[in-house]
Image (cartoon, rainbow, N blue to C red; front, side):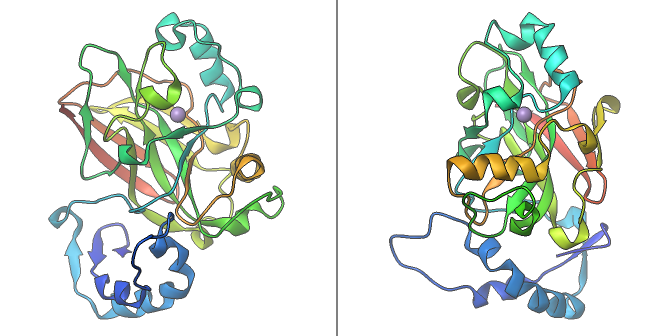
Length: 274
Ligand code: MN
C-alpha cells in the first residue's frame, strides 16, 4: 500500500486471506476480486507497518493476473485527426472513431509495471508512446448500462499502450512483451468518484508530448464499460485502457517517460533495448 505518494507499507500478509485453488485456476485476478473485503485489513496492517521508500522496490503491475486487456482505439477527436493526417501513423489502415471501430484486445503477456520498463522489441520499426487512463474492473459485469457502470470499477491506474506503427492488426502491434505498462499503483474507485475530468500528460526526457483531459474522451469510462460488456463478460481484474489523446511520438532505448494523471500520480518508465 502506498502512503501519501512517497512511501509504501508492506501489507503482503493480507494475501493469506485469499482462497487457495488447484487446477483449473480462475481466469481472473483473485486479489482484485476480493479487494473490497480486504481493504479494511490492508488499512489496519498499513498502520502497523514501517514506511519504506518508494525507490527501495521495483513497482510491478498493480494487477497481476488480468483475464483481458481491452484497448480503446481512437477515442479522442484530436488523436483521430492526427492519425488521419499522417501516413506514418495510419499506414493505410482504415481509421474510424471508436463508435465504428469498437474495442480491441492486447495480449496479457504484454503487461508490466512501471518499475520494469519497456523493452523495444523491433528497433527498426517506429514505436510510439500512448498515455491512457486505465480502469480495473472489480466485479463480474455483463450487459451493464452506463448509469450503473461505475459500480463495477475497482480502481484506476496510469496506462501506457506502447504501439509499433505499421500495417498489421492493432492487437499484434500492441502486444509485444512490456508494451502494456500499468502503474504506478492502483487508486481505488472511492478516491476518484468522477473519472471524467482528469488531466493527463506525458513527457519524454522532460519534453511534454501529450497533454489532455479525460473530459475529451469520445466514449467515457461508463460508456466503455457499457460497450465492452455488451459483447463479453468483464471479470475482476480485467483492464480497459481508455484511449490516448493527441501527441503520440516515437520512443527509443535510453528514453525516460514520465506519465501523470490527476488523482493518481506520476510514473517514470525507462525504455530499454530489447
Ligand atoms: Mn491506445
